[in-house]
Image 1 (cartoon, rainbow, N blue to C red):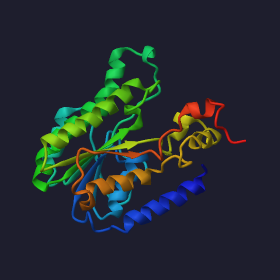
Image 2 (cartoon, rainbow, N blue to C red):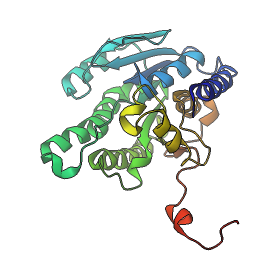
Image 3 (cartoon, one colour):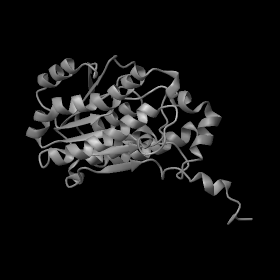
Image 4 (tube, helix red, strand yellow):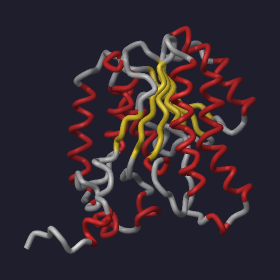
Length: 267
Protein backbone atom coordinates (compact mmCIF):
# COMPACT_ATOMS: atom_id res chain seq x y z
CA UNK A 1 0.00 0.00 0.00
CA UNK A 2 1.43 3.40 -0.91
CA UNK A 3 0.93 6.68 0.90
CA UNK A 4 -1.49 8.04 -1.69
CA UNK A 5 -3.87 5.13 -1.04
CA UNK A 6 -3.62 5.71 2.72
CA UNK A 7 -4.31 9.43 2.36
CA UNK A 8 -7.34 8.77 0.16
CA UNK A 9 -8.76 6.30 2.64
CA UNK A 10 -8.02 8.58 5.59
CA UNK A 11 -9.75 11.52 3.88
CA UNK A 12 -12.80 9.39 3.17
CA UNK A 13 -13.03 8.24 6.79
CA UNK A 14 -12.49 11.75 8.12
CA UNK A 15 -15.26 13.13 5.90
CA UNK A 16 -17.55 10.35 7.15
CA UNK A 17 -16.79 11.28 10.77
CA UNK A 18 -17.25 14.94 9.90
CA UNK A 19 -20.74 14.22 8.60
CA UNK A 20 -21.72 13.48 12.20
CA UNK A 21 -20.14 16.62 13.72
CA UNK A 22 -22.26 17.78 16.64
CA UNK A 23 -23.17 14.34 17.98
CA UNK A 24 -20.42 14.71 20.60
CA UNK A 25 -20.43 18.48 20.87
CA UNK A 26 -20.02 19.56 24.47
CA UNK A 27 -18.69 16.16 25.54
CA UNK A 28 -15.25 15.85 27.12
CA UNK A 29 -13.15 12.93 25.87
CA UNK A 30 -9.81 11.70 27.19
CA UNK A 31 -7.62 9.62 24.88
CA UNK A 32 -4.72 8.03 26.74
CA UNK A 33 -1.60 7.85 24.61
CA UNK A 34 -3.40 10.17 22.21
CA UNK A 35 -0.30 11.94 20.92
CA UNK A 36 0.88 9.77 18.02
CA UNK A 37 -0.01 6.78 15.87
CA UNK A 38 -3.39 5.22 16.53
CA UNK A 39 -3.96 7.46 19.54
CA UNK A 40 -3.50 10.61 17.48
CA UNK A 41 -5.92 9.26 14.89
CA UNK A 42 -8.51 8.64 17.60
CA UNK A 43 -8.01 12.08 19.14
CA UNK A 44 -8.33 13.73 15.73
CA UNK A 45 -11.58 11.88 15.01
CA UNK A 46 -13.14 13.07 18.28
CA UNK A 47 -12.08 16.65 17.56
CA UNK A 48 -13.78 16.40 14.18
CA UNK A 49 -16.90 15.03 15.90
CA UNK A 50 -17.12 18.19 17.98
CA UNK A 51 -15.82 16.91 21.33
CA UNK A 52 -13.48 18.66 23.74
CA UNK A 53 -10.49 16.33 23.58
CA UNK A 54 -7.85 15.76 26.23
CA UNK A 55 -4.79 13.60 25.69
CA UNK A 56 -2.18 12.28 28.08
CA UNK A 57 1.13 10.47 27.79
CA UNK A 58 4.45 10.37 29.57
CA UNK A 59 6.08 12.75 27.08
CA UNK A 60 4.70 15.83 25.30
CA UNK A 61 3.89 15.29 21.61
CA UNK A 62 6.35 16.47 18.97
CA UNK A 63 3.43 17.24 16.67
CA UNK A 64 0.31 17.97 18.78
CA UNK A 65 -3.09 17.09 17.36
CA UNK A 66 -4.83 20.37 16.58
CA UNK A 67 -7.72 21.04 18.93
CA UNK A 68 -6.53 18.81 21.78
CA UNK A 69 -5.24 19.64 25.25
CA UNK A 70 -2.26 17.62 26.48
CA UNK A 71 -1.30 16.68 30.03
CA UNK A 72 1.77 14.67 31.06
CA UNK A 73 0.81 11.49 32.92
CA UNK A 74 2.47 8.16 33.66
CA UNK A 75 -0.45 5.74 33.56
CA UNK A 76 1.59 3.17 35.49
CA UNK A 77 1.61 5.46 38.54
CA UNK A 78 -1.76 4.82 40.29
CA UNK A 79 -1.47 7.81 42.63
CA UNK A 80 -0.73 10.17 39.74
CA UNK A 81 -3.63 8.72 37.75
CA UNK A 82 -6.09 9.18 40.62
CA UNK A 83 -4.88 12.74 41.19
CA UNK A 84 -5.20 13.55 37.49
CA UNK A 85 -8.78 12.30 37.19
CA UNK A 86 -9.85 13.91 40.48
CA UNK A 87 -8.78 17.29 39.09
CA UNK A 88 -10.89 17.00 35.93
CA UNK A 89 -14.05 19.10 36.03
CA UNK A 90 -15.86 16.71 33.71
CA UNK A 91 -15.37 13.54 31.68
CA UNK A 92 -17.85 11.87 29.35
CA UNK A 93 -15.71 9.39 27.41
CA UNK A 94 -12.51 7.55 28.30
CA UNK A 95 -10.56 5.92 25.48
CA UNK A 96 -7.97 3.55 26.94
CA UNK A 97 -5.52 3.57 24.04
CA UNK A 98 -2.06 3.82 25.67
CA UNK A 99 -0.08 0.61 25.31
CA UNK A 100 2.21 -1.35 23.05
CA UNK A 101 5.17 -3.67 23.28
CA UNK A 102 8.54 -4.26 21.63
CA UNK A 103 9.30 -7.51 19.81
CA UNK A 104 10.60 -9.80 22.54
CA UNK A 105 10.48 -13.63 22.49
CA UNK A 106 9.52 -15.00 25.87
CA UNK A 107 12.88 -16.59 26.65
CA UNK A 108 14.74 -13.37 25.85
CA UNK A 109 13.59 -11.64 29.04
CA UNK A 110 12.80 -12.36 32.64
CA UNK A 111 9.20 -12.54 33.81
CA UNK A 112 9.52 -9.09 35.38
CA UNK A 113 10.11 -7.50 31.96
CA UNK A 114 7.04 -9.20 30.53
CA UNK A 115 5.04 -8.14 33.60
CA UNK A 116 5.76 -4.50 32.71
CA UNK A 117 4.02 -5.05 29.37
CA UNK A 118 1.00 -6.48 31.14
CA UNK A 119 1.07 -3.56 33.57
CA UNK A 120 0.91 -1.01 30.75
CA UNK A 121 -1.63 -2.79 28.57
CA UNK A 122 -3.99 -4.22 31.20
CA UNK A 123 -3.46 -2.77 34.67
CA UNK A 124 -3.10 0.84 33.48
CA UNK A 125 -6.49 0.80 31.68
CA UNK A 126 -8.04 -0.72 34.82
CA UNK A 127 -6.48 2.00 36.98
CA UNK A 128 -7.66 4.76 34.63
CA UNK A 129 -11.17 3.32 34.37
CA UNK A 130 -11.55 3.10 38.15
CA UNK A 131 -10.24 6.64 38.55
CA UNK A 132 -12.70 7.88 35.90
CA UNK A 133 -15.68 5.97 37.29
CA UNK A 134 -17.44 8.76 39.21
CA UNK A 135 -17.09 11.23 36.32
CA UNK A 136 -18.44 8.72 33.83
CA UNK A 137 -21.26 7.58 36.12
CA UNK A 138 -22.50 11.16 36.54
CA UNK A 139 -22.28 11.76 32.79
CA UNK A 140 -23.76 8.36 31.87
CA UNK A 141 -20.71 8.14 29.70
CA UNK A 142 -18.71 5.39 28.09
CA UNK A 143 -15.33 3.68 27.94
CA UNK A 144 -13.70 2.49 24.74
CA UNK A 145 -10.90 -0.02 25.21
CA UNK A 146 -8.41 -0.28 22.36
CA UNK A 147 -7.80 -3.99 22.09
CA UNK A 148 -5.93 -6.02 19.51
CA UNK A 149 -6.28 -9.10 17.35
CA UNK A 150 -3.19 -10.24 19.28
CA UNK A 151 -5.54 -10.97 22.16
CA UNK A 152 -7.44 -13.64 20.24
CA UNK A 153 -4.69 -15.43 18.32
CA UNK A 154 -1.14 -16.61 19.03
CA UNK A 155 1.17 -13.64 19.40
CA UNK A 156 4.77 -14.92 19.09
CA UNK A 157 7.29 -12.23 19.91
CA UNK A 158 4.71 -10.29 21.89
CA UNK A 159 3.09 -12.97 24.03
CA UNK A 160 2.70 -10.80 27.12
CA UNK A 161 1.06 -8.10 25.01
CA UNK A 162 -1.38 -10.61 23.52
CA UNK A 163 -2.20 -11.96 26.97
CA UNK A 164 -2.81 -8.43 28.26
CA UNK A 165 -5.10 -7.59 25.34
CA UNK A 166 -7.07 -10.80 25.89
CA UNK A 167 -7.49 -9.77 29.52
CA UNK A 168 -8.48 -6.24 28.51
CA UNK A 169 -11.33 -7.50 26.35
CA UNK A 170 -12.62 -9.71 29.16
CA UNK A 171 -12.24 -6.86 31.65
CA UNK A 172 -14.36 -4.64 29.41
CA UNK A 173 -17.14 -7.22 29.29
CA UNK A 174 -17.18 -7.48 33.08
CA UNK A 175 -17.13 -3.70 33.48
CA UNK A 176 -20.05 -3.43 31.05
CA UNK A 177 -22.14 -5.65 33.32
CA UNK A 178 -21.01 -4.26 36.68
CA UNK A 179 -21.32 -0.61 35.67
CA UNK A 180 -24.56 -0.81 33.67
CA UNK A 181 -26.76 1.06 33.09
CA UNK A 182 -24.68 4.13 33.97
CA UNK A 183 -21.56 3.47 31.89
CA UNK A 184 -21.23 1.67 28.57
CA UNK A 185 -17.97 -0.22 27.99
CA UNK A 186 -16.84 -1.62 24.65
CA UNK A 187 -13.65 -2.80 22.95
CA UNK A 188 -12.22 -2.09 19.53
CA UNK A 189 -10.29 -5.19 18.44
CA UNK A 190 -7.75 -3.57 16.15
CA UNK A 191 -5.71 -5.28 13.46
CA UNK A 192 -2.59 -4.00 11.72
CA UNK A 193 -2.40 -0.21 11.39
CA UNK A 194 -0.10 1.90 9.26
CA UNK A 195 1.59 4.49 11.49
CA UNK A 196 4.93 6.27 11.68
CA UNK A 197 6.28 3.18 13.46
CA UNK A 198 5.10 0.56 10.96
CA UNK A 199 8.61 -0.07 9.69
CA UNK A 200 9.61 -1.30 13.15
CA UNK A 201 6.98 -4.04 12.98
CA UNK A 202 6.91 -4.96 9.30
CA UNK A 203 10.02 -3.55 7.58
CA UNK A 204 10.34 -1.15 4.65
CA UNK A 205 7.81 -0.16 2.00
CA UNK A 206 8.06 -3.46 0.11
CA UNK A 207 7.46 -5.41 3.32
CA UNK A 208 4.52 -3.19 4.30
CA UNK A 209 3.01 -3.71 0.85
CA UNK A 210 3.46 -7.48 1.18
CA UNK A 211 1.89 -7.51 4.64
CA UNK A 212 -1.00 -5.39 3.31
CA UNK A 213 -1.75 -8.07 0.72
CA UNK A 214 -2.41 -10.57 3.52
CA UNK A 215 -5.40 -8.50 4.68
CA UNK A 216 -8.67 -9.26 2.84
CA UNK A 217 -9.35 -5.55 2.26
CA UNK A 218 -5.87 -5.23 0.77
CA UNK A 219 -4.39 -2.60 3.05
CA UNK A 220 -3.40 -1.84 6.61
CA UNK A 221 -5.78 0.32 8.61
CA UNK A 222 -5.28 4.04 8.77
CA UNK A 223 -5.44 5.55 12.28
CA UNK A 224 -8.54 7.41 11.11
CA UNK A 225 -10.28 4.05 10.58
CA UNK A 226 -9.80 3.28 14.26
CA UNK A 227 -10.81 6.82 15.19
CA UNK A 228 -14.09 6.59 13.28
CA UNK A 229 -14.96 3.33 15.04
CA UNK A 230 -14.13 4.81 18.45
CA UNK A 231 -16.33 7.84 17.77
CA UNK A 232 -19.19 5.53 16.79
CA UNK A 233 -18.96 3.48 19.99
CA UNK A 234 -18.88 6.65 22.12
CA UNK A 235 -21.72 8.35 20.26
CA UNK A 236 -25.50 8.25 20.74
CA UNK A 237 -25.63 6.01 17.65
CA UNK A 238 -24.24 3.22 19.87
CA UNK A 239 -26.52 3.93 22.85
CA UNK A 240 -27.61 0.28 23.13
CA UNK A 241 -24.16 -1.21 22.54
CA UNK A 242 -22.22 -2.29 25.63
CA UNK A 243 -19.97 -5.23 26.39
CA UNK A 244 -19.29 -5.57 22.66
CA UNK A 245 -16.05 -6.23 20.77
CA UNK A 246 -15.95 -4.52 17.37
CA UNK A 247 -13.44 -5.99 14.93
CA UNK A 248 -11.49 -3.33 13.04
CA UNK A 249 -9.13 -5.56 11.11
CA UNK A 250 -10.01 -5.35 7.43
CA UNK A 251 -11.49 -8.85 7.34
CA UNK A 252 -8.82 -10.52 9.46
CA UNK A 253 -6.28 -12.97 8.07
CA UNK A 254 -6.63 -15.31 5.15
CA UNK A 255 -6.27 -18.89 6.49
CA UNK A 256 -2.76 -20.12 5.68
CA UNK A 257 -3.99 -23.58 4.62
CA UNK A 258 -5.81 -22.07 1.62
CA UNK A 259 -2.49 -21.05 0.07
CA UNK A 260 -0.74 -24.28 1.04
CA UNK A 261 -3.45 -26.59 -0.32
CA UNK A 262 -3.29 -27.82 -3.90
CA UNK A 263 -6.98 -28.75 -4.24
CA UNK A 264 -9.64 -26.38 -5.56
CA UNK A 265 -7.11 -24.05 -7.15
CA UNK A 266 -8.13 -21.95 -10.13
CA UNK A 267 -6.06 -22.78 -13.20
